[in-house]
Length: 299
Ligand code: PAF
Image 1 (cartoon, rainbow, N blue to C red):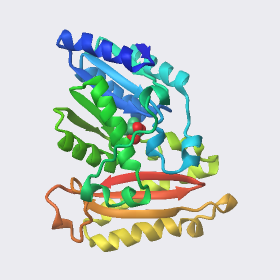
Image 2: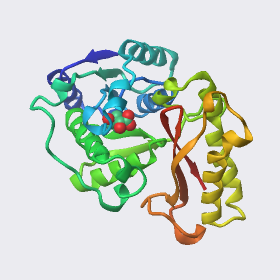
Image 3: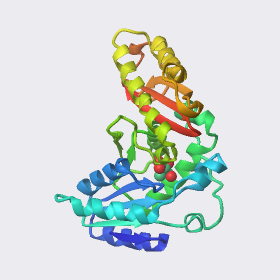
């Protein structure tokens, strides 16, 4: 593993790899790595000759200043996790991993980028209206990473389900021949979707959080015999009233922001289970203990 902090170094390493005909896999991250990220890195190491893992907390995708400030920055621990992952793997195809750890000035030398992306209906639902500018900020940094790393494949986790749809739309817009590789959510033993934000939960909130996935799993069973609207309402009611049924210390409670059942590709809400040929996905955002958690369930 080689740590690279400048775009010039990354571009020269990529040019060298391309001259040898190597296939590059890109895993964009904001650091604070957990097993979810490591599963993306592992897959990229198995499917490519060289892997670029970016660790960059992208300020322009945060519409909430406090969230940006509180975002965990754990570069040394992250690099160790990557090194341990590489040494624990035996049949990896990649011969080199570049950990790209640029500063904000290095990524945006001319100051905050002015370009703005629009993706139409896929960004007009769920996270889009609630986090104005978020997906455009993601697209700016991801495109920059595409330009720098010139990957054949790019790996994204399905926990940020809408982000994948946005990256799919970005690739269509800019027409880069990059294969988008969506990777399944990795969960803790108790079912909580792994997220860098989980480390901000108090022990009591962390103990309560698996109820999100448990509720979604029950919803998937209900979908066999209940209508879309009934399943939606049941999920929102179950989580909103969780603290009444299971009294919690410190007044802890779930505050669902949304739960939508949508077409798995277009992300448009469906009214009936057979309104989609792409499959249906339930996407949820819930506040708990001042932390915004998101998760999905496939129906
Ligand atoms: O999913 C994330 O961690 C970020 O949105 C990404 C794709 C690394 C862009 O900053």
